[in-house]
Image (cartoon, rainbow, N blue to C red; front, side):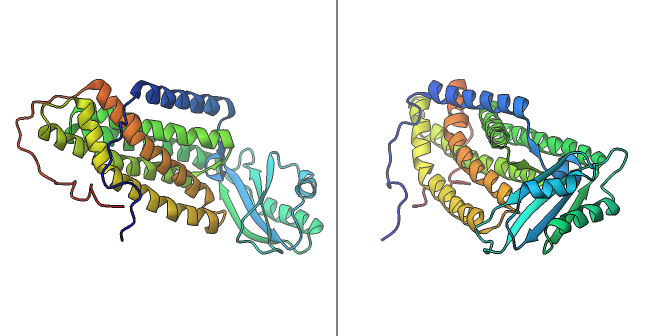
Length: 323
């Protein structure tokens, strides 16, 4: 007996209200951008510059006590947060002390770090300092610029790739879906004020690749069926194509989500931001492949007069794998 996540044969209409689904996606993107411009992102030490000290002690973290201890040092903006993780033991209390980059200095000096550690040790005698990470303001500014360029280049490369492989209508649909995924991911990080660092940029680029793969599988089947069903309306052909690849899409997404859920529960706080971004990206990426990329393709239309022979099942041999 084989497990099926979806019925073997489905005939669902994914384009009953394409304008509504595109409108909802557009509204969510607007909300994400509004949150980004109003609240901004909670940049990590990679993008803000400064020093982060990770501490651990047997007694519970008292943020007020920590802040009072280091506040008298006159170091400017100091952020103290407690780290929660289900893998921590009852006597394992972890905190992150973030010190802003000092004016005229590329990083917080070793002397300043020693003063902070000494101040904290006075109020928490058993405190241990697990790690110290420093990034200068100049480097952090370059990292922001490089990160933005990396995401834009990835999306631009996708546009060219899809344009060459399919038609311009397919390319616009795919790129719109990728922009949709990236904007919503940035929006949820802005709204929840989850720390945004270089690991999240890596997650964004991974989301672009994941969403693109899902979209290309659907588009390959659409192109194949457009040659096969030359008389059927485009909407009907696209519904047939998505239903035929649905089993593969659901199986891929669910297996990926199982791994990500395990990581977010057991992986620890160090990779939690990355895993959350991936978890969110898989969900919106799967959604956008059908309700954004395909819906835009349906709106734009596509030519139906290919003279080239059918490429066969190239790239689609696993599209109907049972899940």
